[in-house]
Amino acid sequence: MTARRLIVAITGASGTIYGTRLLAHLRRAGVETHLVLSSAGVINAHHELGLRRAAIETLADVVHPVTDLGASIASGSFGCDGMAIAPCSVKTLAAVAHGFGDNLIGRAADVCLKERRRLVLLVREAPLNLAHIRAMEAVTLMGGVVFPPVPAFYLRPDSIEALVDGTLARVLDLFGIEHSIAPRWQGVGKTEEP
Image 1 (cartoon, rainbow, N blue to C red):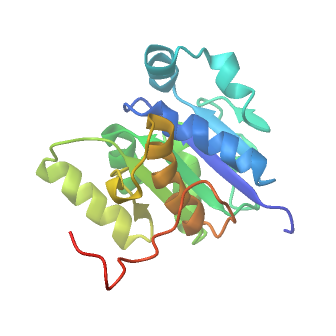
Image 2 (cartoon, helix red, strand yellow):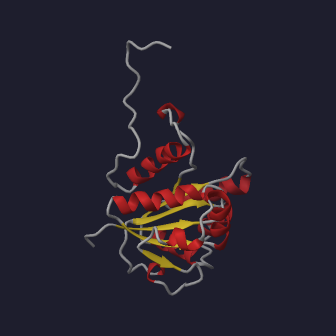
Image 3 (tube, rainbow, N blue to C red):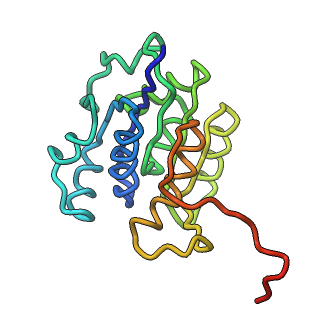
């Protein structure tokens, strides 16, 4: 596999901007994207961003219906760099933690784990209960990366997009994808005082 490929799933958690901006950044980076969009993800995208399904789907190279368990990405023979679920609902987190592949998002995530490919879950929930924490532990023990989109205020973002991009820069780093979408921390100068 020479070309970069990434699976991106958008679920029903708040924060669909993470998934849509991730798709846009991956396109600019020349990464082929395979999108799976849940029904709840479509509802949230319309509510939060005013986007309809068709507008989101144009951001991806390939779109797979969430019900298509026979899709290419449901097989370990599909070559890719991994998968990002952005945002990731706790329902999807639980499905991944317990190998419950009743839809294509859960199945593709399970494939990434079994093939030892990078899986990053931008889990959006607060506060957390013990079931959420145990599911995060299970995913982590299986090799997944639980990455709640916690804002990096030290970057001094001047917009919601910049705040989101601070998180997405770290996600791109996890996949080894070159970018310049957010500044990198340079440290605090020794002569600088509060």
